[in-house]
Image (cartoon, rainbow, N blue to C red; front, top):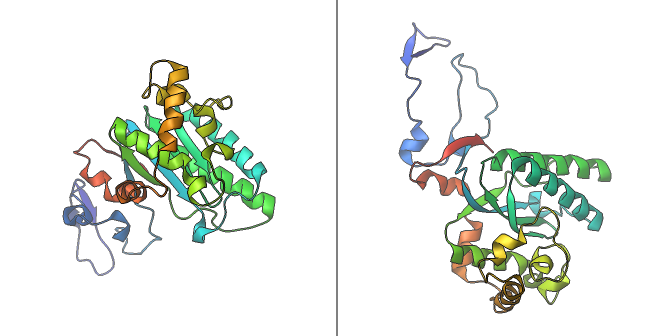
Length: 257
């Protein structure tokens, strides 16, 4: 049992240390809650906890603050790819698909050991500091925290991966996905060797047991993809995980975003 007191308090008021926060009871978002300490003096509001299912596949996105660019040239993309490789190794992520655009990026990750929030903090934070040093800039590079949505089925996984590698085509950066160097398409399609952090075999096994047949099936699947994709897929891509994790059937753990 905790006690709370403050200016004007006539004594100690018992406060349960297991009380469910009011925002959870109301089904509200945690970011609407301001925590006032027992002293009665307000502190800057910390970011709310991110609810994270430690096991699963996630579609992760991070976007530039105010839609600004986060990659200004291929050197930036190369450095980010190296940082991503280190994060994958440290947190034992499995990267199924990725695409680096200009003002955002996409990752499709399997997280078998947790660590999504911690890894993304390190990745985005480290890249932001490096970019600010390189260009002599200050302030936030990324917009708030990253977005992450769970991928529940194999069919959903295939659609999300196709959506990701078709992004450069969709916005006019290239005519074919194979023309864009900074995605997993070329490696998955067998057009070049995969970077060490990319697990092409795990995705390709969903198409065929034979690698050559799987790569051909992957290329065909992507070529048949809608540009733009259906509204159903788009809604799933853009949905923030704060609106999703509260309904995860009690399987979530709390981490910091």
